[in-house]
Each structure stands twice: as C-alpha cells, then as structure tokens.
Length: 325
Image: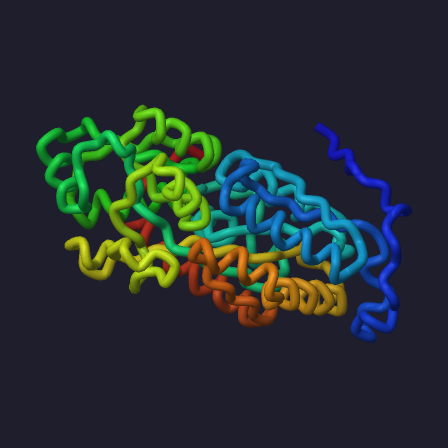
C-alpha cells in the first residue's frame, strides 16, 4: 500500500529560526516520517508516538508515526533503507531490527551497519515474564516445576520469530532445561491478547506494556529480566533472584536514517531527539514504565550496535534457533 501522509503542513506555524542551532536553520522545513516497524500498541509504537509529539514541538514540524509491522521489523526497516537520504524519514529500530536479525536470517535484505546511520540509542528496557492470572503458579520456580511436570505442553508467545521476546523465551528454556513450545505472533499485542485469553502460557513482555496491563490485573508477573529490580516496580524479583543466576535481557531502541544522510542532518536529528528524551514531559512518561533513557551520540550508538550484533550472534548459536530462509 502506498504511504499517504494525513497532514497539511501549511497549517503549522513556523518556529523562529533563532531558536534552532545554527547548522539546523535549513532543516527540517517540512513534516518528517518516523517509521515504527512493529504493530500499533506495542512498546515501539508507544515510544515512537511519545517522541514524535515532543519532536514536533522542538522542530516546529509534524512528525508522523508510520507503523509498518511484519517479518520481525524487516518490512519497516527496508522502507527506511530505501527512502531518500535527506533526514526526513527515520526508523525507530530495536534490538531485533539492528542486531538480532543479522544472525537470525540467512538472507537479511539489509545490513544495519552498511545501510543505516545511527542517530542515537534512544532507550532500553527490561522484559517481564508474565502469565495468565488463572495459571496455578506464583513464581518462576513454580512455573519451571509445572513445565517439567508437563513436557511439551506449556507455550511461550513472542512478537515474531527472532524478536526479543522470542530470544528471552529461548534463553529461559535453555537456562531451565525445559521442553516448552514457541508460538510466534505478528506483533506483541496479538500475543498478549492470546495470553490474557489463556491460549498461551507465558510471554516475555517489555516493561512498557506489561506494567500498564498489570495495573488492570490482566496479567500476573513473575520476574524481570534486568540485573536489578526496577525502581518503578521493586516488588518484582529478577530472573536471577528466581533461581536463574546471570539471566539478563533488554529490549533497546535506536533512531536511525538511511546511511547516505548528510552528517549535518544526522547531527540535527540527534540534537532534537536527545533534547526530547531529556525533557521533563518525555522522561516522566518513559521512566514511569521502567524505561532507561540513553540518548547518546551517533558514534556511541554505532559502537553499541556493533557490540550487540556480536552478542546476539553468540546467543543465537547457543540456543540453536532454526529459521527458514
């Protein structure tokens, strides 16, 4: 489907040029497109829309969030890779699109280091192991005991093969030596709907979504994948505290643009996104849901991405995840 922007840029009042950095006086001059390669309602979508709203204030231009889910973020990422390298199309990628997919797919149609330029590492957040409240367990140890008593019966959902929830589930299966079955979905929200409905057993949800659902008692939480307990939910134990020493997993998010985007525009985008992330309004929204804001430089973002590609290559080799071409 052809993308048709739903906005009228001429109705937006211009920002005073004096309020912009000197190198940004000629950019941006029209609305920007922020591609979220995952389904609406998920953590990536929430983060993209939170950022877009603040960036529109900073730049004086509308920032339109364009959800393009599918194939573990590959579809949306390709759209950005093939977009004009003028700084007006950005990707809100994550650990799957920028690192995991490199090792998960033999024929990945893009290279995150060659085809995309990092703007900034936006944030990272842990995942929370959640289950349907009707499941008769109250801890990770109980869940492990149940899985061992019923080999091949318990299921863990994911946002798609190769997604962070998938790898977290595989790591859990490996660490606890369990026979549990992976059920991939086209996006996290669909997996959570089936979890609430009792059609799957468990899911490693990003904290941004899980904490909101826990408030409504739609889910039961067992543990968080961070190294330490979250300040916003200190009652949730870590996976390490729950008997799986050293278990740690985060979903991280990165803003990126086509690789040939001029450096000056990358710098302007970085300044704007960092300012948005450090604003009181945005930081209050994100940190209340367990998100850790990073907001670093393009160079630091690139170095981090390289290290994560290597890390996930090792993880995927260990869990022996099998995917078709």
